Length: 556
Image (tube, rainbow, N blue to C red; front, side, top):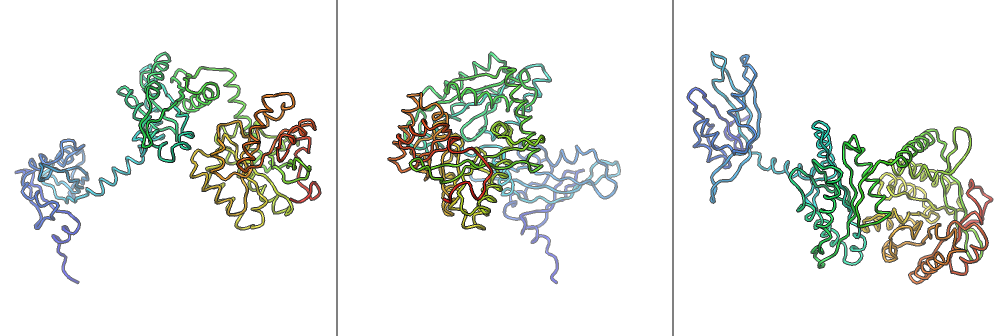
């Protein structure tokens, strides 16, 4: 084996060894320094080394040695630090990051007498670490804080507000017309718009405030020293900044509309989690009532009662899932012209501890509010697949909740089931609620295309309750549109509902979608819908939701 060539080894790892004699401040280097450190060979004293250290360094070798509180017991006291050095460059100086690892040894007076160590160039690693730190703290599109970091800042603000008996606020700003911009101008313009909104919001911030991307189309502002009256003023300032003139994009200037909601802590929320929950609910409320305006959270007994009810319903749902007391009931969907059965919609039911079976619409809403709906949807998927396998002559529609459209585990379960059972794909219909349809059209199309490869059909449920356009439906490749039951239940007496349904049917027929009317409760309504040209009907008039057997309907 060849002898160890220490200088060559050090050069190979961009490093150099040193001996620092503290008594005379002399700095001795190992021979043949690497190119990256060659200019430092002329640095012959500890003081000169400190002068070369970047003034913004958090610590230096001198402070690490002389500031140490440890005692040398004979084997030296270790130190390890990372800092930047200034090295000569054509235009002055450039920074080289080094890792400095060594030991200092005490003299007879127990004070540092000399130090030995190695400095190694780590500029590449440092820059990579910095990039990673930025990625984990900041949103890549807007340069604002990401949600987790924003909430950390809010947590600190709230703690300070409690400590000094002041107040802070969380303001959410939702960009409303991203979907329309995407359809009108293409996929890149929404990114330009979001980045432009971030720039406008940042321009109106005070020192000490923080801006973050709360979700895809919602920004969050953590506002320090902000009372309830000041929150309304701040909201108007930020919203006016966005509304005052169109934002420049690659496609040209585009107008933006935003909606705001805010909450003051600790006055109206004692924790960061509570602030987020309450302001999110407030934002949803103002978006339902009057988009483009602002609403501040105000205590409400009705809201608190509703929240407690959500918790109770969610607990009941989780208990039912754990005890396997969740079942499916199947409501028939018939062809309007002939009355022939075409498929069933799977509807979840809970059997209570008292043995009574009941619908779970309230439980679903509670689960969505509390972020638990994916647990329900995974169980419903498993039961639906089992029913399709048990009844090979039946077709079944499966409902998908908002969060489930992006739940990777749910998607993987479905794809695996379709691969393992090739015959069930053509008998499965996935219903996505219109208000829950994915906002990212490209992601939604990938999802739909993956399912379509197995013969699965797609329906948009409760159409008319949201803002989805027929253009979006066509881009997604939707097969059916289920008209929101609120437009059907009173259609025999409402001329407005009749006009709305006729418009949907006409557009669907022109584009190539089939239509389904739900909540059909009597023959008068059914006859009217047939005359309008609705393709399929569903409701108690044609049969309620029941367990699936081999006798309740002809095969599809």
